[in-house]
Length: 117
Image (cartoon, rainbow, N blue to C red; front, side):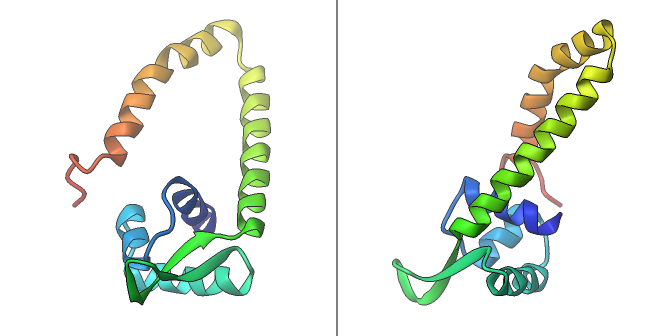
């Protein structure tokens, strides 16, 4: 799951440095470095020279990583859709009515304005 979250973060904003990914995911830089090492060996991410600072490296999802992420997201949507279909009409309506508030909540959680401590 941590690799999926890292791929999702790279898909949203790329390329990125390890420290940026650690900040976004609220993980220790050493944890992200370890994950990146595994993902480089698996071909899920690519490392490039940072065009703004040739001493630094930036990361992006590889085509393999993008394909894996798309597969995971499609499977997740199918699972979510199947679970929603099992709810009765009133419960589905409640879920639908909660979506705008949940979108605002996730925007706030991703915002720099919220204290991340």
